[in-house]
Amino acid sequence: MRVDLEERLRSQLEGVRTFESGATRHDDPNRVDWLRMMSLPVLFEYARYMRAHREQPDGSRRDFDNWKLGIPQDQVVESLFRHVLDLAALHSGMVPMRDCGKREACCAIMFNVMAYLHNLIESGVRAVEDDPPVGG
Image (cartoon, rainbow, N blue to C red; front, side):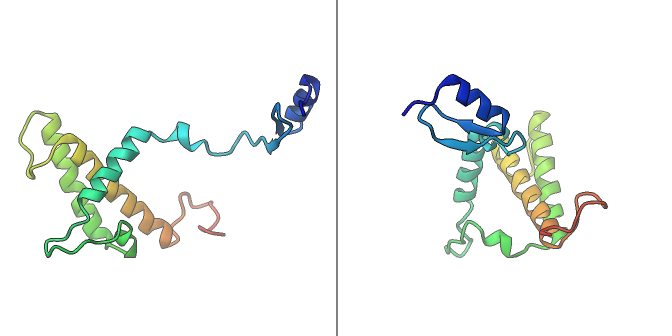
């Protein structure tokens, strides 16, 4: 079954997308477009980083989401600062404190920023004072 052009245009004006096949979907202009908002190459690099850092010094492997159990904010900021210094040194052509490259430093920064923000959200800290409570 084919939907004629007039019907498709009318449904678009009403906030519904009608495909040539006749299938329909809500057409919310404010929905998050994850593929356009995020960088897939960056996400793949971050996944490689996280996979490479699963192994513990004792040889055991932690779960990918182990960090969500909670890392104190002071520890997160200390680690973030260390990795920012590594990236700044690499960017300036200097030798970083740790043996890492720019990509690894960027991923470590991403990890720490994500951990810090995760902790804020989990603790109910609002983005702006007038925002409703997180989750409500």
